[in-house]
Amino acid sequence: MVATALSRGSYELESRYELFKISFFNRYRWCVVINSIVAFLLAVILIILTVKANDEIQLGYEWWFAVVSIALSYLPAPIMLAVLWLDARREVGTLGSVAASIETRVLQPPNCHC
Image 1 (cartoon, rainbow, N blue to C red):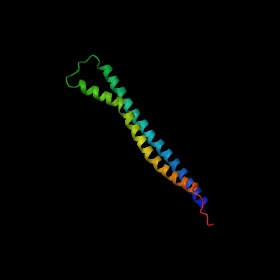
Image 2: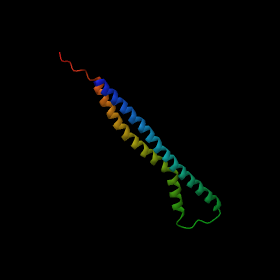
Image 3: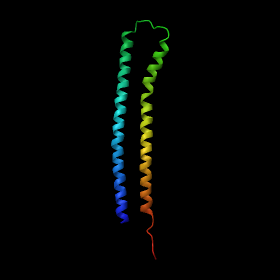
Image 4: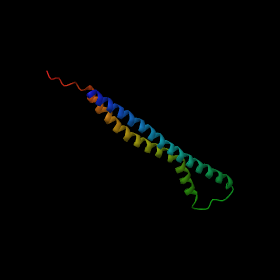
């Protein structure tokens, strides 16, 4: 009876872990799509810079371009990594607590009615 409950609990834990992996992979795919879009925007900016290389820079726009290009270059990947990491940590934490409860039930000595 206890073994069946533990077996069912471990099966449910394994199922939840498999669902977590699928969910994590889907979120990762979205991050790849967003990073690809940002990379495309950066490529377009570089093409525009190449075409406009001989034009004069209007006053007031020089700092704006630098800030936007640096932000698009450096911010998307760390932000997405942090979001993925925090989501995964939260979900793995709940799976870890379930695994710990199963472990304590397995390691708990049987009640002896001597």
